[in-house]
Amino acid sequence: MEIKKLLFVTKFEQLGFDSLRSLLNLRDGALEHVVFINVIERDRVAMRRGTGYQKDEEARLREAANIRFIDWAENLFEQGMEVGVYIVVGVLVPEVIKASRKEDADLIVIGRSHKGVLEHLYSGSDVIELLRRSWTPVLVYKHLSETAISVEEPFDRPLLAIDWSPSSLRAVEYLKALKDVVEEINLVHVVSEEDLNGASATAISKTSKEARKKLEKICKDFEVAGIRAKEHVHVGDPDDEIEKAAKDCQATLIVLGSSAKTAWVEKWLGSTPQKIAEESIYPTLIVPPERDPQKPAAN
Amino acid sequence: MPKKALVVDDNPDVRLLSVSLLEKNGYSPLVAEDGESALRMIKAEKPDLVILDVLMPLRSGVRLYHELKTAKSLKDIKVIVLGEIAKKAFLRSQKALTESGGADIPEPEIYLEKPVEPEALAEAIKKVLD
Image (cartoon, helix red, strand yellow):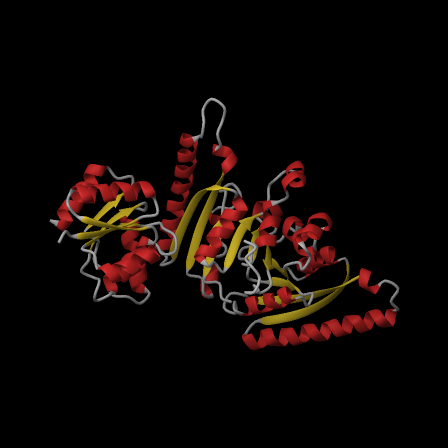
């Protein structure tokens, strides 16, 4: 579960080399290969009445992307890293998933979705679709100027939100492999108010204590792996409490397992990972469950 | 037996140009679209020349060149690099790989920066293979 190869999805205006640079401390772990991908949306070069396919526009966009990538690649090559580049015309999410599978990437990095409200309603967010379809962990990067919090290196102090789902437990293993990168980790479990509806004060206290005990055990595992860890139990709405916990412990990143809800339910009702990925001010890493080899590829 | 040359590039236009230049000059061309399949073909076919792109899927030309020049059985294969990156960056990259534990790497026979004129490539092929 080491991060050896990272797929960096960029449209340039959202994610630039400064964002990538802040992730290069992953080299203290196992990172050795960065693959850049720029997807030229098909609409931008599609057939137009009177002019046909916009071949010149495609060539111009490819060249513009190429010039940027060459500059970035030179920088990384000279540090002894391995670099790959994809510039493709197509639809963002399928192309990213295709490249991720071909390269066998360990992490996909993407910027927050910048679609407008109407576009979101009509076609949904690219980020959410990627989170739903990817079997590779996805880091939704939030830029410093957007959030006004100083996140120098996102993997310094992650906050891991645990709900005991298989994907959140997989996130534990994923973070353990980053012992040379992570400075300190905070674990939070949010006891949802919905689950406590009508419960007595004693019952609430008992639930909270049980959760803390389980978290303590995971903290111990982290300590054995060489990572300082602290546990926290919150009661309330998970979306708000995770954000509050991140603020309280000055986290640099929120890590969650992906939602177990079906795509349809998630589209209409949302899910905590989806909301945090889209709305939190913190960079957010979403870890999917282990891929079931019996199931056909959704990608 | 005509000499064998392997063209490694993910850009189909460059592959087409290189192959036609090689055929015109009586060489036997082979092609690979990425660094991984190129390495397999080099080991299997032992070509006389590799025309090598730098930025490619799966394995870059920087890494592939380093592997060729550090493998006893492959290090004498001649290489023309058709690089997107500057030659000095390519050489510094080789140095960086060497510093992380490899042997000293010789410069490629010829380094051409993209975009390359067909005449310049034709001349480079002739110079290396004749």
